[in-house]
Length: 225
Image 1 (cartoon, rainbow, N blue to C red):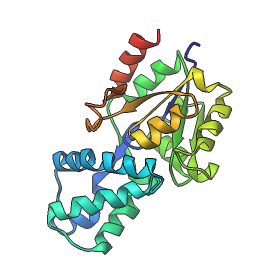
Image 2: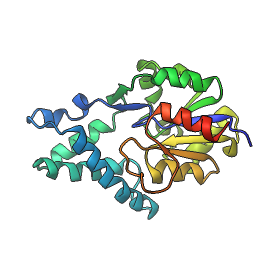
Image 3: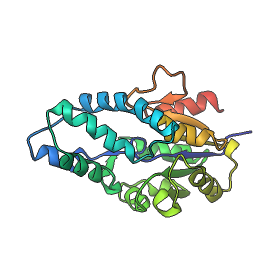
C-alpha cells in the first residue's frame, strides 16, 4: 500500500533543546557540558532506557531522570535537587525551541507529497511551541499526549493521530528518536517507522535510521517511491 502520511516526533527530531534554558542550573555553577559529552551520555542511556520500557519498568519522561543521574557524576556535580531541576526544565515543551537550518523547507517539500502530522509526548502546549518556531503550519494535525491523555508507546496516541488524518497504519510512517517509545510504539500499531538517530545510538542495530530531515527525505525517495 502506498505511503500517504508522515508523522513526526518533536524533541530531538523537529526541535532540539535550548541548552541555555535547560542547563541553566549547571551554567549558574560554571559547568558547561560539551555537546560531545551530552551525546555520549545519550548513547549510553538510551539502550538502558529501552530495556526498562520493554520490561514495563519506565515511561518516556523517566528517561530524563536516568539521563541526568548519569550526566551529573560525569561533571562532578552532586545533588538530587539539581537533577530534579534539570529534569523539570527538560519536560517544559517551550524549552525545546532550537530549529535546525532547512527544517521548514524540507517539511514543505514533504508536505507536497504526503499528509504530515505530529505525535509528541508533551505537556499540552506543543502546538504553541511549533507555532512559535515557525513550523506548525506544515502539519495537518498535531497530537499531544498532554491533550490525548496517553503517552507513547501507548497505542491510543498513535491511533488518535491516525484518525486525525483519516489514514490507515499501513499507509503511514512515523519517525522519532527512541526505539522503545517511537519505533516500537509505531510498528506495534502497524505503522512503518524510521529512527531519527542524531546521536548514533542505534547505528549497529540494523534498523532503518536517519540523522537529519534531508536524510529522511532522501530515504523516502529511495525506499518509498
